Amino acid sequence: MASMVQFRARRGSAPAKAGSARPETQRRKTIAVNAVVLIAASALAMPVAIWLLVAQAALPFVIASAGLVGGMVSLSLHQRQRFDEAALAQVTTLMGAGLILTLLDPRLGDSGLALTLMGPVLAALLAGKTIRQLSWLATASIILLSGITALFGLAETSALAQPAMATGAIAFAVAVAVIIHTTHHINAAFVVQDKTQVSAYRHLFEHVQDAVLRYSSEGELLFASRSAETLLGCPRYQVQGTALAERVHVLDRPLYMTAFADANMSGKNRTVEVRMRRDDETSSRNIPMFIWVEVRFSPVVEDADEARHEVIVMLRDITERKDADANKTEAHRAAEEASQAKSRFLATIGHELRTPLNAVVGFSEMMSSGIGGELSATHKEYAGLIHQSGKHLLDVVGMLLDMSRIEAGKFEIDPSRFQPDEIVPACLSMIETTARNKTVSLSTEIEPNLPEIMADERACRQILLNLLSNAVKFSHPGGAVTLVIKRQGQSISFSVRDNGIGMAPMALERIGEPFFQVQDGLSRQYEGTGLGLSIVKGLVELHGGALRAMSEIGMGTTMTVLLPINGPATKMAETATVLPLHREPAAPKTSWQNEKRKAQ
Image (tube, rainbow, N blue to C red; front, side, top):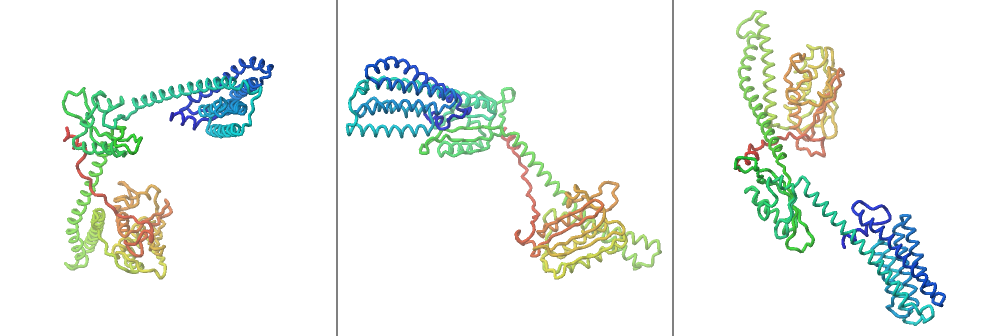
C-alpha cells in the first residue's frame, strides 16, 4: 500500500521514471482497457436502451449514451498520451451517471450514490492528487444534493424514473467490474515491482565489495552477503550467532560489542575499526591471520519507541590503508629522528670547532699585530690569510649553531623596545668592507618618525646583516644595494633591494630551506653555506613576522621582512599573517604491524 501511495504521488502525464516504469505502464494499459470496457458495455446496452426509449423510458438511453461518449473520449485522450485527462474522463462518466440516477431516485442511499462513490475510488487508483481531490469534492456535492432532494421530496416518480433501479444496478455492476479490473492490474504491477526491487537489492548486496550482514532485533543473523566469504575467508554459515564477534581480536572485542549495542538498543549509527580473523585454508600453518576491518552499524529504526532494532552491518577491509598509515608514521618518525640527529651533530661539531678556531683567530691576530715579534712581509701576509680564514670558519660555525638551535626550538629571543634605525649603522659598517671590495654602493631609505619596535635587537641585527651580505654577494661589480625601512600597518618593514643576478620562480619557492643556494653544485661561483636565509626565516618566525621575496633573473632581488611593532605576542588581527614555528612531536615507535605480530 505504501508503494502504491508513493507511486500515485509522483506519477503524471510525463514519462515515468525508471523506478516506477512497470506500474506506470500498467496504469496506462488499464486506462485504455477501462475505456474499451465502457464502450463495449454501452454498445451492448444501446439496443435495449433504444427499445426502451421507444417505450417512453429514456433513462437507460441517457446512461448508455453517457457511458459510450465517456469511453470514446477517454480512449481518444489515451491515444494522444494525455493519460491523466483520460482517467478524468472515466471518473467523470461514472460520477455523471451517478448524479443522474441520484436526482431521479428520491431515496437516500440508492444505486446512484453507490455509483457516485465509485468515482473517487477509480481516481485513487488511476489519477493524480488534484483529480482525487476534485472527485471527493464532487462526491460531497452530489451527496448534499441527494439529501436535499430526499428531505424536501423534490424528485417525483415519472416514466423516466421507473427503470432507475434496474438501470442503476446495471451501471453499478459495470463500475464494479471496472474497479476490480483496475485494482487487480495495478496491484499486480506493484507485486512485480516489489519482487524486482528485492531481486535488485539482493543482487547488489551479493556483489558489493563491502560485506553486508543483517541482524534481527534479538541479535540473530538473518542475511550475509557473498562478499563476506571473501572478506572472512569462510562460508557464510560459519558466521551465524556469535561467530562474527568471536572473530574480532580480543583487544577490540569490547569496542565492537559496545558499538553493536548502541545500534541495537539506542538506534545510533556507529563506525569502528577493529581487527578480525581471516581464515586461510591454503596455509599449512595453524596461525590466525588478522586484518583491519571498518565496521559500520546502521540500525533499522521503524518505531522510535521500540526497545531493540534490526541492525545492518557493513564490513570493509582497510588493511592496506592501515599499512600505509603505519608506513607514513614510521617514515615521519625516521625523518624526525634524522633531523634531530643532524641538529645534534651540527651542535656537537660546532662546539668542538669553536674552541680551536678561537685560538687560531686570536694567535693569528697577535702575530699580525707584532706582539710576538716583528714578522717579515711574507709571514705577515700568511698570518692575515690565517686570520681571515679563521674568521670565516667561525662565522660558518656560528650559523650552524644558530640553525641547530632554531630547528630544535631552543633559540630564545629577548624582546625589548628600540628604534629600528639604530641598528642600521652597525650592520652597514660590518658589510662596508666587503661591498667596497666589490665596488658595490650601499644606501638607505629610512622613513622618519618610526615607532619603537618590540623585538630582540641582536636577532634583528643578524637578520639585517644576513640580508645585506646576501645582497652584496650576489650583486655585480659596480652594483647598488639599498636598505629601506618603513612602517607598514602594525608592522615595520625591512627591505633589502639589489640589482644583482636575481632568482628564478622555482628558487623563490625554496627560500629559507637550509643549505639551499641559487647556484648549486661544484661549479658554483659564490661561496657560502646556504644557511643565511634559513636563519633569517627562523628568526622572523620566532618574532611572529613574515619573510617575502620578489626577484627576476638578471634584474635583482628584493627581500622584505615584516616584524610586528608590538612584538611576538601581537594578535593576528593586528599584524600580518603570523607564521608560528611549530614542531610536531616525534611519533611513537610502536606500529600496528607489531601488534599484529603479537596477536599471531
